[in-house]
Image (cartoon, rainbow, N blue to C red; front, top):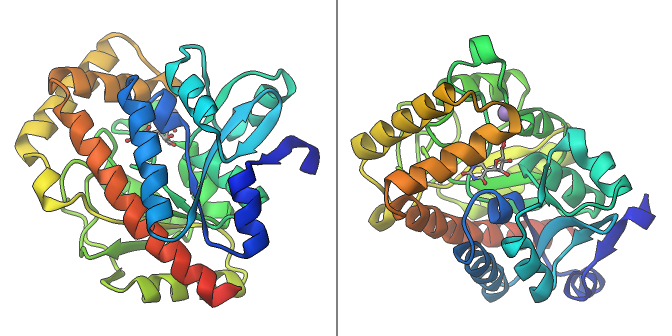
Length: 305
Ligand code: PSU
Ligand code: MN
C-alpha cells in the first residue's frame, strides 16, 4: 500500500514533529472553481491552516501516486490543466494504475487522508442526495464514504443543488454525526440557514474534538460532518441564489447532464449567472472553514497524541 502514497516534505516533517495536519481536497480546485482563482484560493487556504498552527495536506493523484501535500508547482499544474480526472472511490485504482492526473473528491480525499492517518479534512461543501434522486438515483459517493471512513469533514453544509432534507436522512441512516458549529440548523453553503434543524449543535471546538475522539475510540466506524456556516458578511440572499440554482438545475436537465458531470456543471452555471458573486462567497466560506477546521485539528491532535 505504501508504494502508492507520497508525503510532501512539509507533511513528512509535521508527522515527525507530531503536529496537527489538515487534509484538503483537489476537485474543488480543478472542477469547482475557474483558473486562476482556484489556485489562489488553494494557496490562501493552505496559509490559513499554517497561520492557525497546523500543516496543510492538499491531496491529489499524480503519476501513479497519491500525493499527500502538493508543491506550489503541482498546485499550479492542477489549477491550470483541463484534462484532470474527477476521482471518486470508483475511479481511484484506475487513475493510479494508468498514471493519470486526478483530482480527489470529498469521498476520495477521505480515503487518502485516512491512509495517511490524517483525521481532519476541510472543504467547501459535501456532495449529497440530488434533487430528483428518487428517479435519477444520483446520490454522491461522499455519503457512503462518510458512513465508512474515519475522517471528519468541515464544510459549510451542502448547496441547495441538493435535497438537503434527504441528505440529512441518508446521513442519519448511515449513522454519521452532523455537528452544527455555531448553528442550530444545517447551513446551505451560500446562506447561513436552511429549514433543517440539527440534533447536535455546539459553539465549542473542544466539544467537537472530544466527540470525534470518543467516536473513534469506541470504534464507531465512519466520519462526521462539521457544518460551519458562511460568515454573515459574505452570505448571499436566499431567494436570489435559490432562483439561480433552480435555473441551473433546469438547464442541466435539458442538456441531459448526468453522473459525475452534474455537480461541476451546476457550480459553473451558478457562477456564470451570478456574474462571479457565487465564486466570491465560495472562496470566503472555504477560508472560514480552514480556520475553524484547523482549530479542531489542533485540539484533536492535542487530545490524541
Ligand atoms: N460541492 C462544492 N464544490 C465542489 C464539490 C462539491 O460546493 O467542488 C465537489 C467535491 O469534490 C465533492 C464532489 O466531493 O463535488 C461531489 O461530486 P458528486 O456530486 O459527483 O459526488
Ligand atoms: Mn452524482
